[in-house]
Structures are given as structure tokens and as C-alpha cells.
Picture 1 (cartoon, one colour):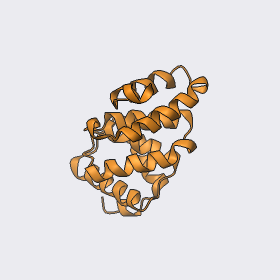
Picture 2 (cartoon, rainbow, N blue to C red):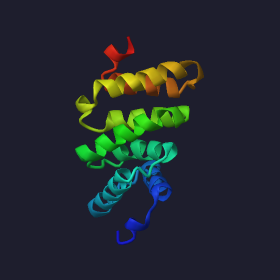
Picture 3 (cartoon, rainbow, N blue to C red):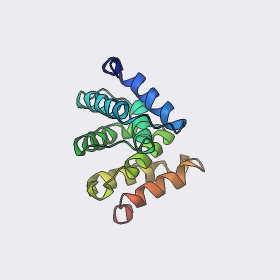
Picture 4 (cartoon, one colour):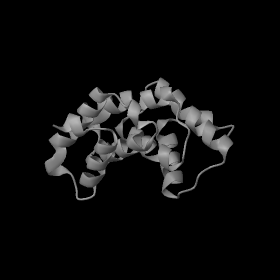
Length: 147
């Protein structure tokens, strides 16, 4: 825990992604420290599209306690990164955000923008990206935004 403050965006995103892929949930103190470092980096706007997608996808799998301010940062930075995400990155980010409680607090305008981005990419989404994106949008309340 004492060296977590040294992790940059890429290292933190890689670590969180690796832990989540292994389905290894760290002890409470380590997880809390990783989430705090994520918040610090998000407050500084450090995340690029790839790292943000890894973080958004990993946090719910690690059962991280995400504060309202971290959730707001995720939403804000994801909106900024939407054009830069790969298709898989976009879908992983949407899925992660949809899995973080409480989804009811996701602003309708954000969901509409995410739905618009998915709609523009429909012809290029893979067979695995498409259901993930649609499930995520539905979980975020996009039924009205999609129309």
C-alpha cells in the first residue's frame, strides 16, 4: 500500500485490469488505497481512453466502493473520451459504469450521448460488443434516449 501513490495512469489501469481479469479481489485496505489513487488521478484528469476503459470495467468486478465524486469523474471523463475509445473500450466503459451502483443517478444527457455514440458505431461493433453495449445502455435507462 505504501507505494500506490507512485502509480501513474497506465500502471494503475493495468493493475486494476489484471486483478479484475484474475477475479482477485484485494483485501479491503489495498482496495481502498487503489480506489483513492484512482480518485486522485481522476481529479487531475490523468486518464486517457484506454486507461479509463480499464478502470471503469475493473471497479465493479473488484467490488470497489465508488464514491459519488469518483462516479461523477468517471462519467465526465468517459464523455470526453467517447470519440477516442476503441469499440471494445467504449463497450467496456459503458458496462462498467452500468454495473456501478447507483445507476439511477446517471444523468439522462450522459446516457443520450452514450446511446448516440453506440448508434454511430453500430455497423462496426463486433458480435460481442453489440450485446454488451445494448445491455449497458438499457441498464443505464437508455430506452428513451435511444429513440
